[in-house]
Length: 116
Ligand code: SF4
Image 1 (spheres, rainbow, N blue to C red):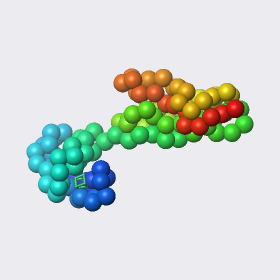
Image 2: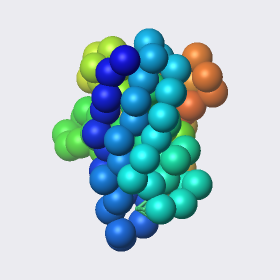
Image 3: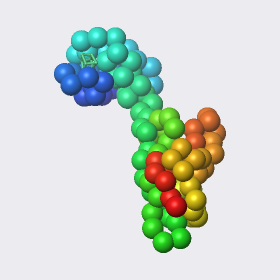
């Protein structure tokens, strides 16, 4: 058994949740005040994910981008290598797909500002 401490970020209460794991299976959770925190802590302890916000190169500046869904945290450095190899040119509009299906699960990297 291993124990992971998680601070829930779903609401401002910031409950400190303890997740007891048997391998990668949840054996017990305590400290959460609601079921949303239970799901958050389970995901965070077994497969943490993050929405990725970063930039890609353009001809003369950087363009801000983000992932359309959360990505597996332990794969983010791999995705950054892909993103860092990309260079885009104007015109680009907010929401344009810069990299399609970066994770093989349907998550795209999209522009978060216009480039004219
Ligand atoms: S466990 Fe529930 S009450 Fe506590 S921080 Fe998370 S969402 Fe808020």
